[in-house]
Image (cartoon, rainbow, N blue to C red):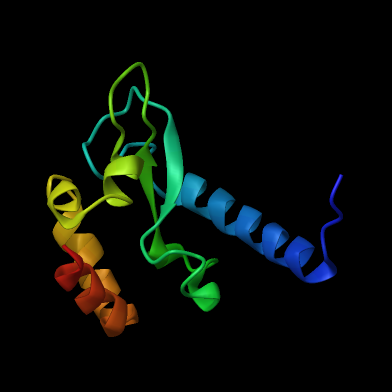
Length: 113
């Protein structure tokens, strides 16, 4: 089994606290489709791999449903192309956050497809 570095252990603890705070403060509902009856995931709007400084930022994390029983979930749609992202109820809100937090990534998303 691979050992976890002290730095990653610290990030994991902080992320766990952020997830708990989100759970305490937000409705347990997918912000992409509005459904309550599907398994939810903490979805990072700006990927953790792109902006490590935002991986524990609550504003960068939303609830998106997971793919389930043959249905493509909002988490997967958000990670897909721009047309799929645009199908989500929270598309404009998410893009506004991204534009303010990382304008380079915002324009990359718009010009990617």
